[in-house]
Amino acid sequence: MARTAIWTSISTSLTNDIAEGRYGPGDKLPTEAVLAARFGVNRHTVRRALAAMANDGLVHARRGAGVFVAQTPTDYPIGRRVRFHQNLTAAGRAPAKQILSLETRAADEREAEALNIKMGTLVHVYDGLSLADEQPIALFRSVFPAERFPNILRDVDETKSVTAAFLRHGITDYTRASTRMTAKLANPTQALHLRITEGAPILRSVGINVDLDGTPIEFGHTWFAGDRVTLTVSNS
Image (tube, rainbow, N blue to C red):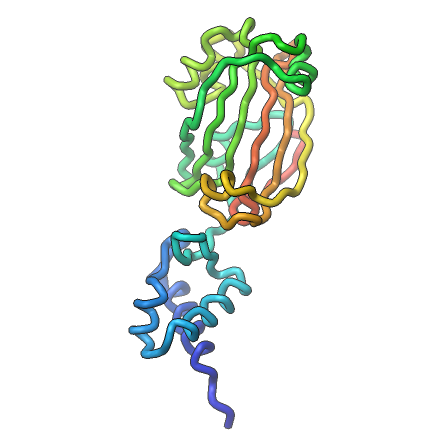
């Protein structure tokens, strides 16, 4: 009878550890050196076992950080109303946002067209990172017309919520007028923030939100980590 390859036995043992809950979704596995000592093999053998597990979707490597147990992708609805905190809470995840930058500048041509304002008109720009259970799932940029929402950057800074910031400006409801999605590869900056490998698949969403009168109030870009989010499209 043919003997089972050592790397296969290691892969099976680690897979059983995950199945039995020793390592949960998002947990970091021990380093190659620690695993090599545990199983009495060299690092190359451990690396082959981890590569096989990665091919099966059980783990994923983050450059410079280690190997992590794969998360179950979060369902994220894209419909007439896109609400980050509500979406994550409904999926059983703990939502959070990290502000990367807040600035006021002149609108470029694309921003001006999306917001129906003149190019060069002042806009407020909010760049941030969306997290689920403390794991980054998306980078985003929201652009608002400064004349209509003069204090929105202060309100975003205080509330960490665009919906709450809009409410302070009298916007009780708003809807998504358009959404465009494109598959991309993560550049070095995106990879660093999302803790993924440079060149890993991401999904870019470009959307325009409007108030109840149909006036554009937000032009947004979101870059989702491809293995952490399942986008679902609905009319609700």
